[in-house]
Amino acid sequence: MSLCETSPQIAQSPGLPTSSEGDPVFPEPWAAEAFAMALYLHEKGIFTWSEWAAALSKELHQPSRAKDGSDYFDCWVAALSGLLVSRGIADASAILDLQKSWQRAAEATPHGKPIELANDPLR
Picture 1 (cartoon, helix red, strand yellow):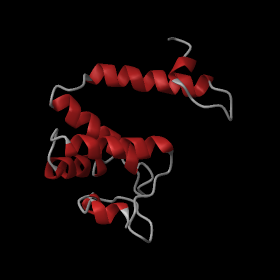
Picture 2 (picture 1 turned 90 degrees about the horizontal axis):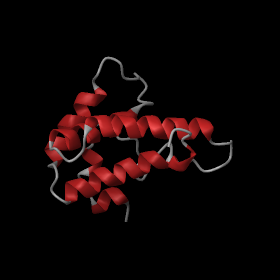
Picture 3 (picture 1 turned 90 degrees about the vertical axis):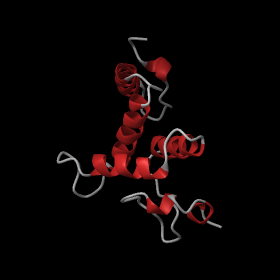
Picture 4 (picture 1 turned 30 degrees about the horizontal axis):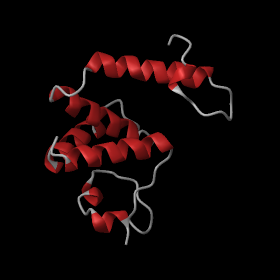
């Protein structure tokens, strides 16, 4: 049984890249983690699937988004962040600070080594 058969709402996510079996396809591990977080928070009642689809669709249709869909999971993270901030669960500046910290950690991590937040030279 595929993931989409166990959770049919997943297949309704606008523009979700899927395999021939209908399962989500992720370009990087972080995308799978963001996907899982959104599903978990939906299952916990933080937002409805209609609210999620509307937030994701809004992000996907921003003029600055890639026409080829290559930034799909960036849209996913932006939609998730927006929903969490709008509900008072997360702070927008804290999210931005954490994003910057991960970017610095990635830039400071030698090729082939795992990227860890501890690698951020400003931490």
